[in-house]
Length: 312
Image 1 (cartoon, rainbow, N blue to C red):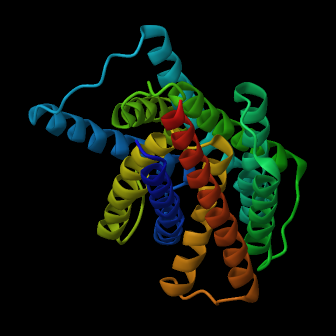
Image 2: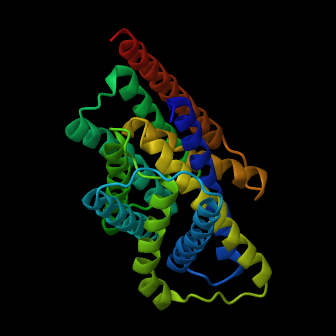
Image 3: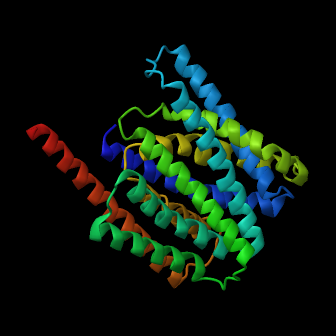
């Protein structure tokens, strides 16, 4: 798949992930459903939709990809599924322990740093001066966007959980990129399906303890929002994410995914009637500038590789 299409997939995934937060905030406001139960239904619903999509594709006789070696397939499935479970669960626990603002800024802020270091150590991927500047700008934009509107309370336990979440997210991104470097990446639809199967099984005990069935006077709205979360920011977004992350440099992926808080902030202002603040505007502009800069750099790098291969 081309770098341009991969970047587009990642942008769509990042924006879609941001809509999940808005949907979740409405679910929490009108029902007693907890974050772990919501995460379980997200995985379970995404799994059901992806299984249906795989069945439709097989029915149409779509050509199958070459089979992955067994050991590599097991590594991908278990690594992605466990990483996804830890990423989501630790993030929700961090938000509960230290608040939404600090939990978000530590998780999403530490992610690009851990991914950049991991990509340099494990795959020799270099960011360069421009890339380092773009990552720094993205982190600054994230901090302004998330912390600019409210005071955060920093609690060590919550920060530790947020760092655990960031480490799991980094592991997912790095393993996806590493396994896809030789062009032998697995089908993203299949990868997403197995990841959600592992995630649903891992989350079920904690979600059951929290309460799986929401108590609400507006059950139709809750079910509709859960269906949306399962379909768009889960089944669709993760399939696009795994497809794009196998092609694009890991650090670039991590910065593009910071479109999630931008999308969430814009929805909060335009749909949920939250006040547009200077911090929202400034943080959004910084993040979008960083994402655009890295996307251009990624496209130029791919073009340079293409010219080099043509000459060779």
